[in-house]
Length: 128
Image 1 (cartoon, rainbow, N blue to C red):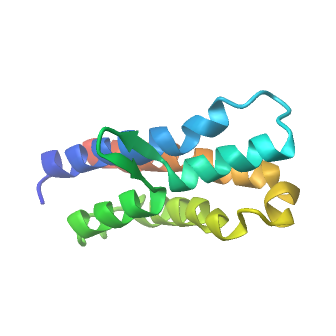
Image 2: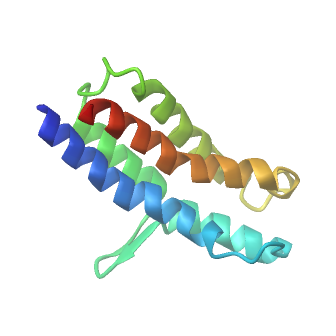
């Protein structure tokens, strides 16, 4: 995969995952109640990208990206941190409906919002 193809793939990931995973949390008021926060996280992870063809979860967007990327980014220093950031955000899906989601509200929000920044760092590294 050449540099232009890598950038295009990351641009798509930044749009489809980076932007839309954080969108529900960005739309919350400063002090959302528990159900509102729960709904935002659920939407962020399970209905990340909604379009004419239905919704796509963050996990499926990520899996599609990994399938398409193969090992194209393995030699980039920012690849593993990006991979770890996405996995950390996706891991909160196991906590939906559990008290840990609310106890860790700041961490959940930080992890989900970190996805976009991690994708940008890898993109910037490749773009030089």
